Length: 324
Image 1 (tube, rainbow, N blue to C red):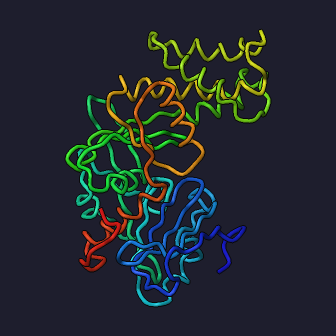
Image 2 (image 1 turned 90 degrees about the vertical axis):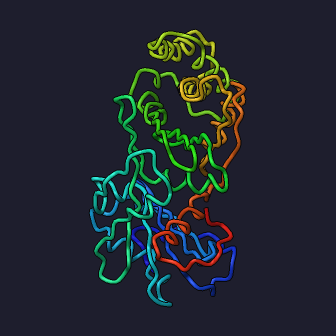
C-alpha cells in the first residue's frame, strides 16, 4: 500500500496477522491519524500511524482512508469507526455534538454513516458541555476516556495535548469537560513573543520545570499568570536561569497554572491518558504539587471502539477481553 508521503509507521502485531479483522478504528486528528486493525475480542492485529491529519489531505478524506486501510478489508466487509477531528467542521462531515452527561451507549446510538465507494464507515460524534453558561467541546478524547474508564464507575481524567482536556465521569457518563490551551500558548510564547528571544534549545531540565510548576500554581489573583509570564524574560535577563533552562521553566509555569485550576486541592486522583512525552511532563508536574495521579494505557481507546461497535450492532455479542 502506497500512502501519501512516507509509508505510515507500522507497529508489530501482538496477535497473528492471520487473525480475522472484525473492526477498523481510526483516531483521525488535525495533524495525524492512528488506525487500528482489531479482532472481535479487541486484540490489536496491527496499528498504523501517519501524518495524514485532516489538514494534510486536501479534503480527499475517502481516498486517504482507502490508502491507509484498504488491504485490511480484503477478507470481506469490515465496519470502520472514525473518531476525532475528522467529524469536525474542517473534517469529512461535521457531526453534531452530543450534550453531556453522555454514556457510551449514547455515543453508539448516534454514529453518523458516511458515503464511501466500498467501505462501511461511521463517525463517533464528539461531546459538548454547556454547564454554567460556559461551552466546551471535544472530539476523539471521549473514546479514550471511556476506554480508560474500564470497569470503574467514576473518574477524573487528563488528556494532555495542544489543548489539554480534563474530563469527569460519574456513573459511567461523561459529565464535565474543561479545555486548557496550554500547549498552544506555550508554542505561541516560545516562538512568537519576546519570551523566546533569550531561550536556547537545551536538554530536559527537571529542576527548572518543577520550579516553573510551583510558580505557576502559586496563589494569586486571576491575572497573576500574565505577570508571571514576563518573569520568564527577567529570569533570563538577570541570569537566574540559563538560556537552555528557560523553555522548561515556561512549560512548567503554564502546566502548573493549569493543574492548580483544574485539579483544585488535589484530593481527587487524576488518570493521565496519552502516549506522548507530555504524559511524563504532566506526571512530574502532578508530583511537584502532590496531586495523586496514575497513568492510563496509551491505547485505551481500543476497548471503547470495540464496545461502541458491539452496542451499535456492528459486531457479534461474544465476550471481549478488552471491551468496556
